[in-house]
Amino acid sequence: LRSKVTIVGAGQTGGAMARELAPKGIADIVLLDVAEGVPQGKALDMSQAAPIVGFDCKIVGTNDWKDSAASDIIIITSGKPRMPGMSRDDLVTANTEIVKSVVQQAIAQSPNAIIIVFVNPLDVMCYVAKKISGFPRERVFGQSGVLDAARFRTFIARELDVSSEDVQAYVLGGHGDDMVPLVRHTTVCGIPISELMAAERIAALVERTRKGGGEIVNLLKTGSAYYAPAAATIQMVESVLLDRKRVMPCAVYLEGEFGVSGIFMGVPVKLGARGVEQIIEIKLTDEERAMFERSAASVREVTKVTGL
Ligand code: 2OP
Image (cartoon, rainbow, N blue to C red; front, side, top):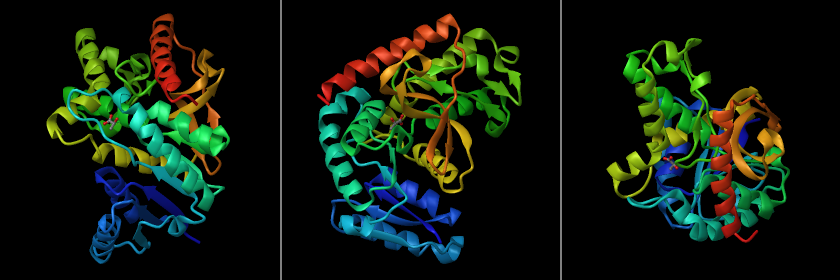
């Protein structure tokens, strides 16, 4: 039996996610949006790629929550994107209302689903989804670290002229400009990048990674990134649906891990059929811990704005 994944928001991001997920053949897809015709049009268009690309899952576009009933995973992408000059935190008030309403409607149809959030400010919108759903933290988490790490991996791979697949990196903390790329754990096939690159080049790539979302917003001018975010989110979806138990950085509700409680932050987790099956605590150096705490402080500030 195929799983069912509902993607809420049929904008650039939701559309790219559906297109990324469909060829995997592991889930039927519901693309849901309030805009009439848009999800239907994208779903029909994508279905017509099936005979060429070679997939046979169903893709339904809809404005009706009933079509999302009994989903295994709900991905929330609806919300306003950043525009040039905005920080992710500038979206908090508008997107809190959107995420609240989406979560209420989603859980009414799919009370046992796993919710994956990709709405900014990311860590705070995960918090809203958790509070409103009342779901355990295993079943509400956010995509950010896989994307941030992918950006760091791409920059390193280009610099060293090696395949980005062979670059492993972790980016922890909140999905904001004070995120924490863990240079110490960043390697090319196990070789620490400090042995391959000068310290000032590493520092420059860390900075570019931190501002990686903004760099794309400034280029696009009409919204934020969606290809890499979609790929990152679907990698998480696959780990859950196939119970792959992959270890990846995700935004999860912390209850004392890494010395933080009561907010969402990006940390390494094991993703399997039950959702977040384990939070993997790694020892941080004093410097890393200070950066992590700085990032936690800003997530906490913005979380307060939700009033939840
Ligand atoms: C990004 O970093 C949209 O926050 C997202 O591109």
